[in-house]
Length: 203
Length: 203
DNA sequence: TATTAATCATACAGTATGTATAATATTTAA
DNA sequence: TTAAATATTATACATACTGTATGATTAATA
Image 1: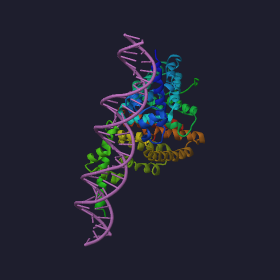
Image 2: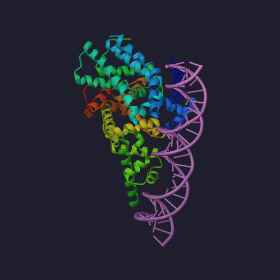
Image 3: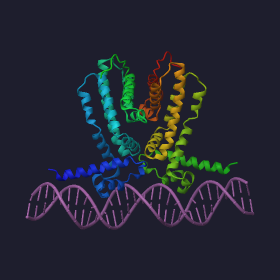
């Protein structure tokens, strides 16, 4: 089964790649369905046939990028290590890798999410998943190290959520700070957010 | 001089207020020159006459909001107090007040700045001013408390720049954390960023 | 009083999104 | 093998928005 499915996927990937490339253009006004179709070497109607609308195309593009950004590694963070601080370290690393994997494009997509409510919905859902991951880590941390009372927990989660956001990563990377340094800065700030004073740094 | 100037300013304010209101609409696609004109009760051509283009209108809107957000207080931060930690505290407060003054609208304008390069230019300039302010504070801090070697200084500035950004404020406020708590969280993280352990907290 | 500034009306060019209808080719299913 | 379903394309069109051109009108200013 699937000579047709395969061809269909191939066109979809071709369109998504073209869309990704065009999203890097200086002005978003250059990002038109016509331009995407031309760059992907398909007709404009094919783009509509595959993605329904411009919004649909952009939503699919975010998924496309998430797949390429190794987000499946996130699962490993939670089952392998059981030291919560190490989990936090790995959690930060996985997201930093994702943010770094396509920084310019993610920046634009996030901006579009703040403007178009339909796109924004998808981003909010992903954000909530990140927050739930942090909750799991912090609950374990609270049990293993020192317990956090509810208001502390809420502050810690929101602070970590902020620190692991794309916006934080993007700001700290700025015009070229090395990836490892950015991760290091975020981890240190994260330590402070949960009141962790490192007796040792797990690696 | 200025019965004409006054009338002109009045229309401009009416248009900007209408634009501000419309920017809160669910979908940005509803933000059209036509809609703004109708909401301001002027003709569409008047909007063009006063602001040249949609981009021009949005740029003017950001200035409009900055004026309403008490950004002129920023000057006082630098001349009155001379304790650098207090300066940092006040700096954080002034920006937090600004970000809080029109959160939804600022969020949209920042998003538009990441999409439209012309709008983005203005935001980048403002960002750089914020960074220069932090540099002044940190140089004084470095002289009064303990000196920071260049790489530490660079990291500290970028971390503070990130912590005082709208995105950080917006994330920490989330769905309703009180303003004072948000400021408190940012200040604590800022302490950690510069390696400041509070012997006392200046108020 | 003559000029200038601000507003508005009408019209138009250009371009974008999205839909309708139908043709074509190719794969799948009966 | 034949019939049906799927994916792509072509042409055309409705709708909407930006931005400009031209000119009229009113009121303030020099």
